[in-house]
Image 1 (spheres, rainbow, N blue to C red):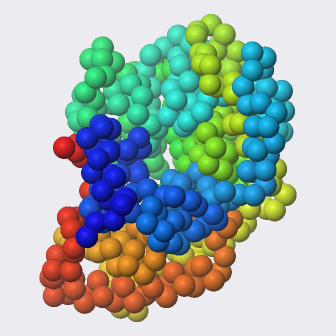
Image 2: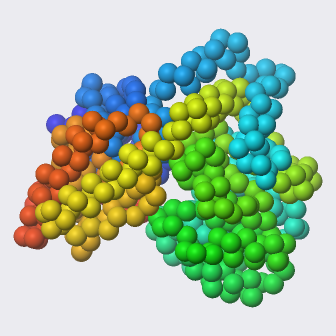
Image 3: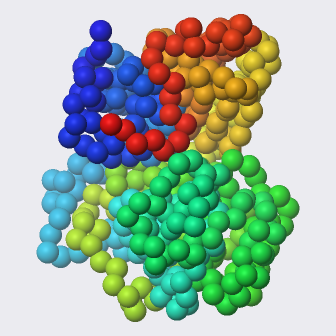
Length: 437
């Protein structure tokens, strides 16, 4: 019998195109027909569904937003105080200036800041500023950067252009054909591909957009060469820190790798679950925002900046990145050890605070679905990724890895007998973008 969450999701798909507001939260991405789908409350790394079942979140923890853990008491206290004082007014919130000062203190190369409330829109703002600065249209990019037209335009030429950047199957329906050829992808650690783009479009690139790190560390000199190319062609170098930011240090991951961008973009972890995003940059670039139109009412509300200030200050005070790296490393090493013990072939990737594994072979996606199914039965929200938070403690990791080893053994046995499908209760999870009916 389906639970309250599964029944509500069936209703949601009749009212909400795609069922959810975020592709990464679709139940089909985890465990079709079985995922709890909705939460009634969350605290730290514990989540309760609509039927009162409690789970330990050893998966994405708010899709990377809850870096301190869900419902952090210090951040929530700051937000409650500002709610009592009023979160919106005809006048501006002074905290936005205070936050700008803090962000520039953490990133001495940056001098100016603009705000938004989500990563995708913040990236669109950054690209708009770069185009305004340079007077050029084309953008070379590496990695995943959201849902806006400038990015999906890459798939106007061929609908698989974005497949290697995060989610396969993204279609550019609704993106103007006039944007064809304006978004040009290159792969991480493949400087020759960026060089080829520059050779094909000399003096036409407004920006080079990339994540400082995602699945693998940069090879020697890669980021430095990207910086050098951007400077040589007068393109704006934009570092997308939406995922990596506030994981490896207090601020952007680019600080760890020693590369200086012209713009860096933050969201997710900077507000610990409260909507907040920031575009920081050099003044000569950021001032170009004045030559175009970038403005929105709810970018001026007060909760986002207050939550970000509380989050960042606590993060710095407690040296949270050190904890995230330690906990994440325990999990990544635990996956490898458990898989080796039972003979399950896996590949582990990602930085320690944002780790992933994939099960090799033709049954890999079905095996990953079975992993989620069996872990859910033991009280874990778990998939093939783990995003560490400050609320994750050693006892959580030990309990989780104990279950992982047992379930890896079951999967290895079923895989060896070519019987993964026999153990699945429902359909195999989606691995990319798939339209829902």
